[in-house]
Image 1 (cartoon, rainbow, N blue to C red):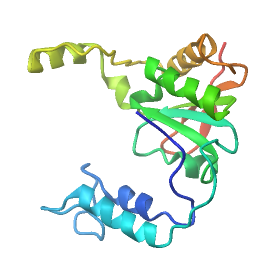
Image 2 (image 1 turned 180 degrees about the vertical axis):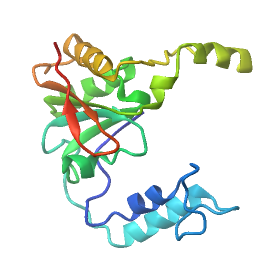
Image 3 (image 1 turned 45 degrees about the vertical axis):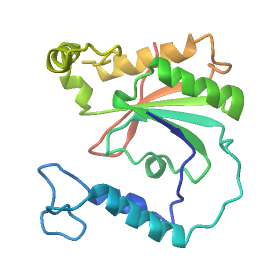
Image 4 (image 1 turned 135 degrees about the vertical axis):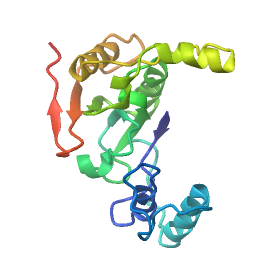
Length: 203
């Protein structure tokens, strides 16, 4: 999970364009420019992209407080380009991502710091269609225990109904005693095929 102010603006998207081309899925365009080839080191490619990015980088002169005073909690899925999808610019928001975009104790930790020390007031929760957590169960923890000899302390947080899981995440935010602002908490499902957000009724 990461807690950060966006590190690049829309006009200079060197790193993003390279990351989008890096895929290990069966749909990779073998032989196309930017595709992963045998012997390639992904981290080295990211570093090369960063050097190109840094050449044109200018200090924006802003502090760590998000301009829009909003924190976005979303899945780590590589198909979600949150800043592009939401029309966000450098410094607009805090972005907190994990597997499934579920509200865990560590997400509450980040939101608490975001609100109490960095001034955010609104929370936007984003799950998405065709999420990998829909195909997992808590049996995954047992499988790991059999493989490595230690049972994970964390829950998988898998789900079958994405809307209900968004509602659960909203409820976890709204009932947390650590958060100062729980009146503007809204949840959405991002459609990976259309790019559209659908709001989930919290009722």
